[in-house]
Length: 152
Image (cartoon, rainbow, N blue to C red):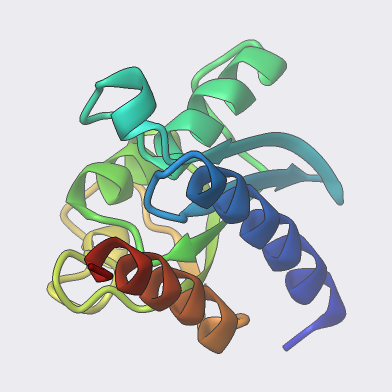
């Protein structure tokens, strides 16, 4: 694991902790361009009462505002959990060239677990994927969150 990926994934983990503190599933995202964080996001589905308010979507929307356009060329998205089909689709649509994620999602992950939308040659864009950065820490955040929810 490179030091750069470790640093930015730690920032995504901090975003995930913000979500957890608000009772949201702890997933965080950071978008980096030219070595600088340009946008962040964390799950807000319950707070916003919006099924689209995933960490990746929030970060992509923020980055698009910062860059003044929908093409996020030259950006890397760091996210604590493997993206779902909606988020993987948003990554393709926003032309993000690189994704770095922490924990796998065997129930909804569409970057290798259930399918791989980011490297399907039928799409007009593919994304380089690096997985498993701080995997244990990202996974433990989710396990701890759901354990607290199930406590009597």
